[in-house]
Length: 420
Image 1 (tube, rainbow, N blue to C red):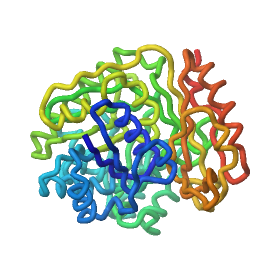
Image 2 (tube, rainbow, N blue to C red):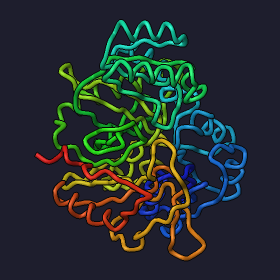
Image 3 (cartoon, rainbow, N blue to C red):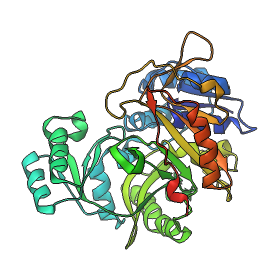
Image 4 (cartoon, rainbow, N blue to C red):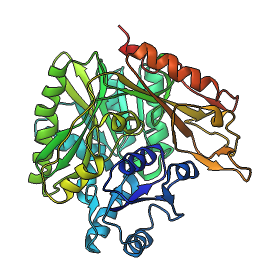
């Protein structure tokens, strides 16, 4: 098979690399991809992930068997619908189904309608109304931009001043443009978070190994929310009974509900969950593979990944087998200043000496061979697998030390919660 992966980040690097492990895969194109993928025999082409017409033409020209759409923006633009209309099979939700990620308000109303456990919330388009509700509810409180904001449109406020500032930023100063014209204010839930992703085809749900992401920029879960600073899988302190309950009370009702809403979901449904006294509840839904969770979950898939997707696209029952032992840990190297303003085109020193798995995200090759420059906020992720978290951390942070440079930073405590 020849397969096209749409996207350019670490998630797409991990997807492409896993596809190439299959004996049934001859070639993987990642468009636009990034320079760091090329050394893994992934072919990249500089076509924008939002240029639907060019992507459809490319898929036809290369005679690809099917497509995986990685990022949320092209999904919400209807890229899967465009491929379908051209007679090209694409793995990912339609524009209608991707709304479960594209609108926090839609997701909240949907969960309410189908009795899917989540925090109580209200949505607002008027600042004064939102402000009054905030005063009434008090802190801690969670404020979310309704639309897409690259993982940064959520503020968990423990002080009223912080909550009001977040509300002003979003609603009055349009910090996230159209995405924050409407906001969702929801109750703060306290508990352990985990990411549960699943392959979904209509009402059929096939869960993956769970992971735990680290959203905050700095150690001890301090600082602003980011797109994710690292992850690990599995999560030993989340009991299997909790995961089973989440599959039963969240994933299956969500898949069935989407069919009932005439938005049948095909692709990867990501549930960001939290363990509360009443059981697992939804913090957010995404309509695609999580990043950086994909980079630590896919290496744990023992089954043929390409065959799994191919089976789903052809309505066959997929076979899924996961690693049961050990732990996979991934740490993000980010540009200094991220998730706020940061400089690009900084040399990534020590990269050639790293012996662990590296998934490139915001990188580009310099004119000199083997020299990479930064080209984004999250630059790359280094990944290691070991028997225990203590071993995985020792192995991984030894590699991260090789990348130390004042232009970049990384968290030193990824995975620490998994150590008993």
